[in-house]
Length: 140
Image (cartoon, rainbow, N blue to C red; front, side, top):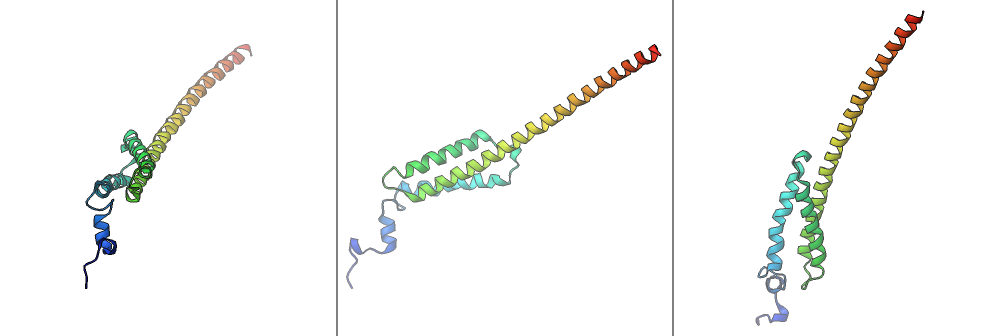
């Protein structure tokens, strides 16, 4: 049996020697970037009050920019594009969680402010009614 030529390489040999194989940064960059994605996904369990919107917005922007860039550079690296797309998804999810939390705080504070103003107005109305009552009694 003869040795396989370069055109007849096994699947592993083709992967090993490819432009995006384990001998290149095009393979190891996505592997390392999965750590960032997994760390962001681990924050799904963290309360929204502890999320950094600016940090997660940066992850979201990085994921979006590099996903697009992965289709422009040569060799086109779908593995890197997929990890960057998921980085964008994790960042977008966390940013929306943080913004919804901040919005709920604003709505809660607005509700408390409305109650406070209504109570003050009620007290003013009550004192005005008492004054009118006194005037009516004095005229009788």
